[in-house]
Structures are given as C-alpha cells and as structure tokens.
Image (cartoon, rainbow, N blue to C red):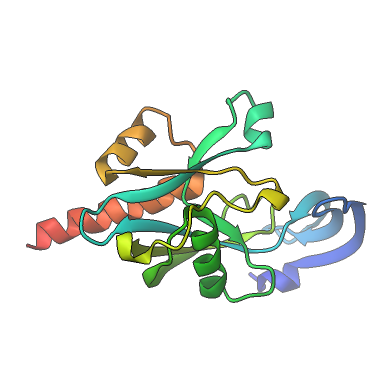
Length: 199
C-alpha cells in the first residue's frame, strides 16, 4: 500500500468560518485499499496546537486543577463547569514554555520538574489540534499569585486542590469529564501502580 500522502489528493479547500478559529471544508480524492479512488469531503477545525499539565504537590502528591465554564459542554447538556488540568494554546511558543506560563496564569503557582509525557490528537475526526501532555510539581514556595486566569480573555477559574485518589474517584463518578485531565490522571495512576509493583 502506498504511503498516506500518495493516497490523498486535495481537490478543493473552502474556508467556512474564521470568526474565532478556522473551519474549512476539504474535498479530496482518497485511494482505498482495494485500489479505487473515492471523492470525499470533510470539515476540519483548526485552533492551533496546545499543551496541558497535571500539577502535583511535591510532598503530598495532591493534584491542582481548575474549574471553569465551557460553553460547548453546556450546549451539550452538561452544566458547563468542568474540572480540568491547566492548559492553553501554544501561540507560536514551545510547548514547555507555553505550559509553564499557562499553569502559573491559571493556578497561581510556578512549576518545577516539568516533564513531557506524550502527545495526542484529541479529536482527529474533525479537529487539527495536537496536544502536548506534561506533568510537573508545585509547593507553597512556588506560589506567585492567586491564579484564576486572565479576566480580559473571559477567564474566571477556580483553583481546586485535591488528593490524587479523590480526583480518580471523581472520574469514576462522572464529575471529571474533561478528556485531557482524565488522560493525565490515569497516566499518573498507572505510573504509581507500576512503581508499587516494581517495589
């Protein structure tokens, strides 16, 4: 089978909206596995790439999350108030530089021990965004402000500190429903389980 780029021929790209981010309709010919070409159209939403980080207290292991209103979740039937790991778009910065700044802006803590753990496409059927996932540490000595985000950007975040197990239990109860946050919590939990088995 040919490489993917040889199986895709872009026929037309139309911008449907660029009011906030860019929504495009892409028409293309795709070479199927049986050797036939099929013409398809898909919409892609380009909001740039982003980064997210799960902050853990250096001594207690507690996690630091934020609670904020998300309109898309609200119109989907949720109350819209989501518990999330700190995150933001890259805006032409490196993933680590951006997530350090975003974490401090949202939580009020500088971060140390930042480590990238993986990257993932969050909704590859329609959204172009690739998210860079990090973990890092905080403690009282790294406090730099109140957090809460940037009011001028419409942010109004509540900073929430809780034990890791309480956060995992909140996932089980359906109280934490943000995918990036669940992925980071499960990553940390799996690492701790593996470490305990190794010991």
